[in-house]
Length: 131
Image (tube, rainbow, N blue to C red; front, side, top):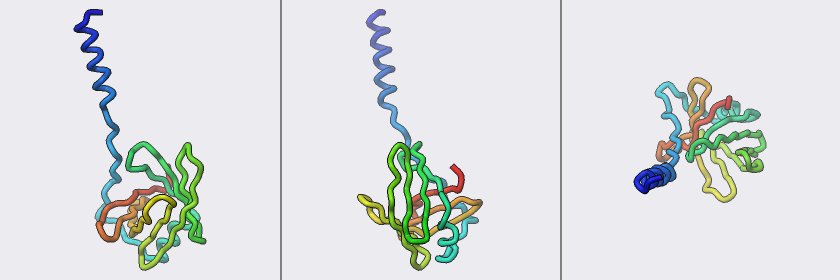
């Protein structure tokens, strides 16, 4: 192999290694989405498994909510984590060890759910009932 071909091959390999994965951004909340109240949130969350993707992208996870305030977070290949959830005045707060508490309004449209920060309006997560 000539030195110019070797140099070009090396450059291509180096550039390929520099490619970064784009962070996942949840879809925006549609205008047709409805904000759920406490009763609707509890009825929607409890006893169901929801699926989402982390902001780092391509890292699927699931969340299951129990009536006793326990939420189970699962993401392969890690063991399931037990977290706490609470509900007051239309705001769901999730407490996970090692992470700041995340509070959200829950908005829904077409069997999809957006957890939206009540102060900033930022979508904390986008969940579905199917993976």
